[in-house]
Length: 401
Image 1: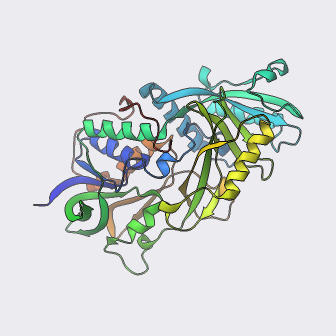
Image 2: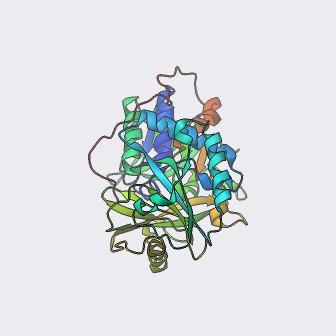
Image 3: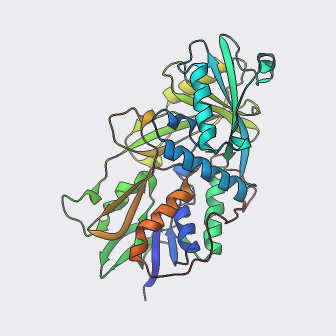
């Protein structure tokens, strides 16, 4: 007999496990299908930051920044093993695009959106203390600002969220390759492959959290009509590359501007070494085969050399992930970072999650549950995701190291 669940989630990245946690906390039966391993793709290839998104202020995404700052504080409270406050430094040079007064205004607004808590405060580093900034070049340096955000191990965080979901009753099936789903008689019949055998389950709600594979998964969900947008949504895959270099970890995160194209790049601690990223390059092809290009590697190493001339940039490891962004006329750097919730009238109770940020996974899950509640039975909540404690379930660093 086919087992029935209230909710089936496809994809074990941070967004998928977040929905599984929210569903289980709300008292629903939920199963998550993951084809290879939790955080095995984009969610293990992020910049490892839990932050409000200071740069999103420039594009007017104030609501996203405020929400992210709120979520950051929840994670700092609920996952102290996994999320740590880290000082961030913004150096302003003679030729930097954003002048010192502009950075000051941006940080002041950031603090205001952070509800003016002590942890939202910032300061200007006195010139006499510049030599203490991990070898930062002082050639044409005009000022340096310090504020606070946070950092995490994205793989450990994803595993911890799924672990908490399972403790609340969620089920994880992994490895489980999604094959297809069909909606009829007010439920989805989902077929997946496990141990080379086809297995079926059914659910009232279906959540596609496939990340870069979101459109590929949608092609195997029916019914749909020829012109239905469920076949393919207007998204773009953007490759983001990172390097782990031999240089010992700096004492904070440096938020610098690429001298070649003025993009923002982070130079930051990652365990005992230094992590540099990220790039933004249009990507077409199989997300499973994504890898940093020679151009991206040179681009990131040149940025390190520019700001930290004495750093050892021997590459210990490099990785790249495909992020999902909505298509648009703006540059990739300035595209909205909000999660896009795709639905289709042909598929009641179906949502595809596209984009979104690591920091805001809980808020994304909360909004997702609100959108599908009309397709679900009445249940009594057993927990509040704003209060669930998250613990590291092993001592191993992230998959990509």
